[in-house]
Image 1 (tube, rainbow, N blue to C red):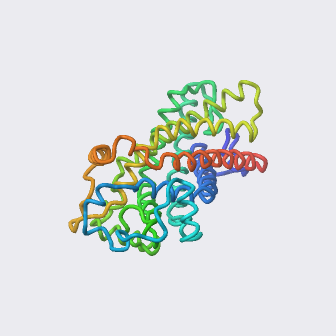
Image 2 (cartoon, rainbow, N blue to C red):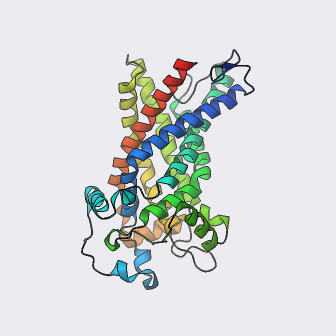
Image 3 (cartoon, rainbow, N blue to C red):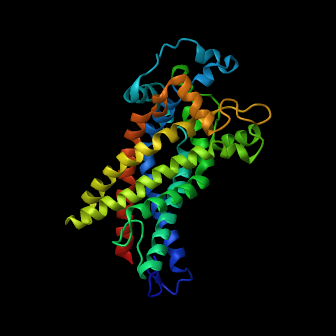
Length: 344
């Protein structure tokens, strides 16, 4: 990071401004940490996505979309719960099934998480500079930063990240829902064979770029809620632990990130559920969505047909995925920051 003495990433005479250097550092560090975390937690994310489509009334009401394979009884049986899904996918689809949509997931992590951390860090620095001439980044909360202000910054950062990553979330969701085994299929089956075929198919079926941003309103709320709860709460917990005498070390990062996961998951899950359903639905010949017209329409139909608790379908899998994922991101993030500092 470029400092006040003209240094940038350990080099002198850097052409980058301090703000630009901060953005690049935060984007690269957070993006790398997110990719490492999702590569570990991706199988649970696949299960979470499939559970969110379990019992989707809109799909079952359209007879033309029920394939003979999906409608027929399968010798595999319908797996129940997170563990049952993981075991069945591993048994009948192997590693390919557990890591469906991984390429799209990695692109999603870089675009969303990198953008969120970079925007949040830059916002904190700008606000700190304007108030007391000091600066801070996303991993070092200052006394002048209030929880409410950081929550607002996290929300703004989440909106920016969601807009950048929405196309990749749509691709990831559709690819994760696919299965060659009838009993393991979830939601509408698009039949994508690769990331490239998914890009092309969405563009053609949805009549242009709008297909990549279907459900963007739900996705913005999803990422915004997660980001507001994640970044500000991590800062608050970490600052409290440091003030209580804890060292700025891995155990401190583990405790702060674990506590953060509870708050962020509670806020995000309903919007994650709605965003997944809106993005995976098929299109009419004119490119309009077939099942849900809008965010309120998806909420209303899901609650009316499946009950209020449907908004938390896949909630356990989401918690089992997002909890460790969140911990891994912050641990990797902090370690990369320390590693960079040791070479500066």
